[in-house]
Length: 111
Image (tube, rainbow, N blue to C red; front, side, top):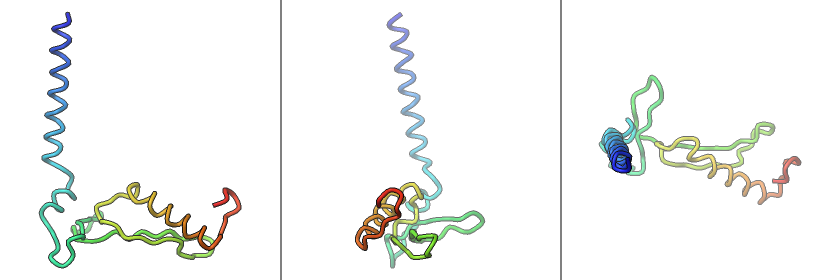
């Protein structure tokens, strides 16, 4: 019984490793483009693509704005191949620091 379960476990592990290797070979479209295209003038630019548009080398501009007063509270630039979830913590942290620096509080959570 132990030999059968051990063999089954090893087969599962091997299959998982094969799947990971195949996935890494394929990569995402952006990863494939970024391996292939590099700007000679701006090596930090990354390929990004919006639906219905051609891929292009870009940067990602991120801003936080106070909706009531329309004042920019934070601004940052990152690689274009980042997702919103990858940059949110950075821009929120910057916004909090900027608001604290000028002693602005929203009244609800004491930022």
